[in-house]
Image (cartoon, rainbow over all chains, first blue to last red; front, side, top):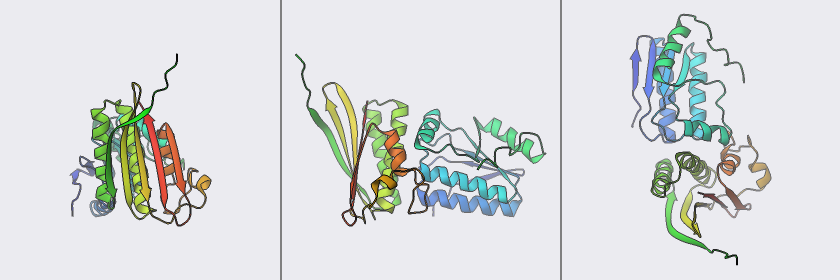
Length: 130
Length: 140
C-alpha cells in the first residue's frame, strides 16, 4: 500500500504531503505517525500541507486526530504552509481547526517545536480550548 | 428593452462515485474545469472542497452514485453546476441534516451545511428509500 514518508530529524518527525490525499492514505498516515512517535519517543511532529490544494472536513478531522493522538503520546504537532485559499475555505466550511497549532512555514514550525521540546513559553496554550 | 438571457449548458460530464479514488478523480476533474474556465483560485478551492464533501456523502451515506458536472452560461455570465445523485437510503429530516454537527456516520457533520455555504445555490431532493440528489451551483 502507498504510504506518505515520515522523516526524522533528531527528536522531531517531519511529514510533507505531496500527493492527493485519499481517505485511507490519510488514516494510514495517522497510524504510521502514532507508531513512530511512540517508537522513537518523538517530541514533535511537523506536517507540511503547502502542496495540498484543498483540506476538506475529512482531512481536517484527520489532522486534528493526529494532533490529539500526538499530544496523548507527549508530542506537539504543528501544521505548516496552509494556502490562504484553503484557510478561507476551511473557515467557511465551518472548521477552524481548534486544537491544531499552525505556523506559516517550515522554519517557524520547527522553531516552535524546538521551543516546545525545551519547555519554552507559548507551548500548547490553546490545546485546552475544546 | 430588457432581454432575458436563457441558461445554456455549454459543457457536461458525468463521473462515477464508487470508491475513495473516485473522490480524488472528482476533485481533480472539477479543479481542471475551473482552472480552464478561469475561476479565481479562492473560488476553485471552495468549489473543489464542496465537491469533495458532497461526493463523500454520496459514497458513505448513499453507497455510491455519480456526479454530473455542467458548465452554465447565462448571457456573459458563467457558472458551474454539480449534481450528486445516489440511490441510498435517503434523508428523512433534511432540515436536521443541514445543521452543522449533525452526523450519522461519525464524521463532523459539516458536509451538507458547509457545502451550502461554499456555493451560490444549493438544492437537495431526498426522501427515505428514494436516494438523494444534491445540486449546487456557483457563479463566476
